[in-house]
Image (tube, rainbow, N blue to C red):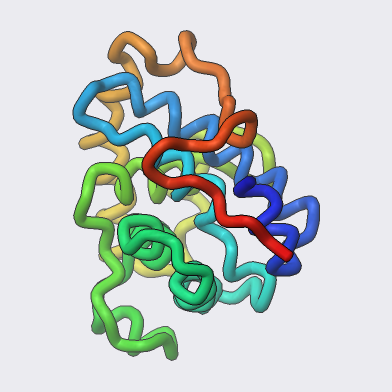
Length: 184
């Protein structure tokens, strides 16, 4: 399943565990019927696919390339590409030595996965305040974007099916719209 894709790409168990933890947090925001839970699970589980090649910021680009090469749906590829902080503008990407492409999450599921990653340190859930304390590397604009994303998404966490009523079943069964690809 998704874990097999990560392991097949060369991700270590720490990355796999982190992806499970991010998915669990992301599902806390997926109680609304407007959120595509299958995409949230696929994006959450695969957002760090690029960490099989690097642990630098470029892991998002590399992960998106890897997901595209595996034939994963465009929605999953975009979620992987846009998960850094609350996203990076083309200008910020260029300044950081990345491809100068817009990598700001536009769709709700992309935003949920990016925010869940912001709220996860390793396998531990952290607060938005803790994340903001660690966000100095990306600069003020990115920090403000991260904070605003948290404020925008927080109401979703309190809907039925959110925070306390969901358990992460991320890798237990195949998903209807975004089935995990078989790895060799």
